[in-house]
Image 1: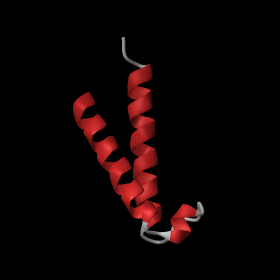
Image 2 (image 1 turned 60 degrees about the vertical axis):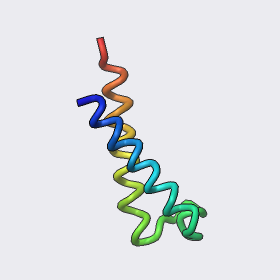
Image 3 (image 1 turned 90 degrees about the horizontal axis):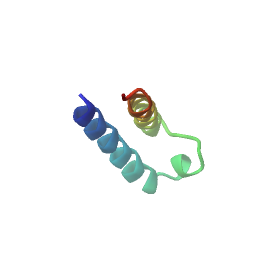
Image 4 (image 1 turned 45 degrees about the vertical axis):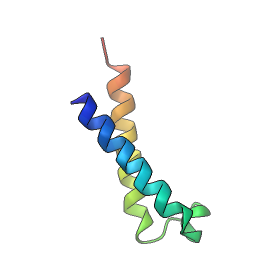
Length: 57
């Protein structure tokens, strides 16, 4: 699961960064209608991945 979670987290990061580079509202921390769900997905997966790392034995 960790590899899959990491892969999804990195893909979400790449997607969000690519979108943000070309979107002025998203660059000013006011996500647009398209960028908001991309940012939410990235944040959700980042939280899940960091939680996974903290809970590793």
